[in-house]
Length: 490
Image 1 (tube, one colour):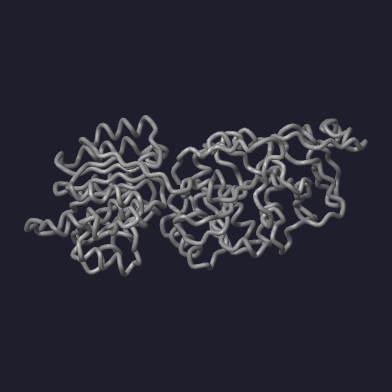
Image 2: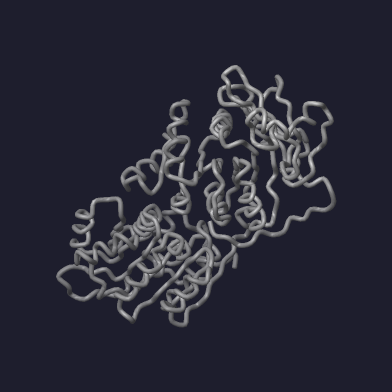
């Protein structure tokens, strides 16, 4: 397998020259398995995560087929290959990759997505093309305006089918598939295989070859993961303190909602951090400008929602910060995978408040490994320090029984909810601004010893956080119980 080359896989010379120019030297596992089968004209069900090289796995055979078959003498070139993508960003990346692979070849690719003016896209289609890369909604808009024809389609690829399901596009996909010629090669790729995607595969594919590729190391194994226990009202202070370290050079911050993404980005800009927001309410032009700004280094931080998680393929992301934990544990793996592209390693930090503990447990069940609790935020915005590392230098795991403290102050914790207005299990006192400083009460599952801030210096404020300087902590009691992570797409 190590001696396999693109030549031995059957890729033709014009494509080989482009691959050499792009420095594609060794095929990835999914390319090794998929390319020969696709060149032979087989339908395919591919289960592979993003970042495994699947765009080249399906794109190269399609391009080779299209250059070998001379189209009929039409007044204008009609598309012969259709590729559906769930998001605009992913569609544009696929289109860019196909153009790079086919540079200098007589194959024209057009990308049609929502968020951009439809009239220029209609004009592009009228000029003629060989490949259409589209999002389902915009493609149906073009169908309704009779701007696209499917009579010559010989190759149909459905990418990120599980994401199509998540976004509610499955019915649109079925409608589009019903418009295509019955005789065609059909490919379906998905990071996961829920029952609805299996049903769709049975409807679309004919005697498919099944290809399932797991990366050499699961994404969660390549990423150093930490969680900071923090009250929801203190997350902005914690994020600001994290970003004071120069080691956070290229950061993606994930939120659950568009409104929160805008708010976090605005907060960072006010704090002097170059940041951009990207989510579904932004126009395609705004989203592309934000991505370009982040990719070229003008913006240091990109604040994004889960909708954009799989569509962000930017090299060199140093950190992913989960400002809010996702509702679906699978989305956590998609998020943190933005910092471990193409086999690289990365760092992921999650800010978890009390209401998100159940989400954290779901993530740990999915990945089958605990996430180290590295500290607790106890100071209000504008005070120092805002971040207090956990007291156990060896690293305490969430769920371990914390050390007891028999001081009178700690014995009174938990009763102040009635008197101080803090949530149950926390002690509140007023600072000079009238805000409450909250100290974590020793409670099962906190994973950190109750802390006394005093004049203790934080590890942020321009310095690398202590928990990123030491090796990943291990459990103190008994052998490790960590298990291999379940395969989840990124």
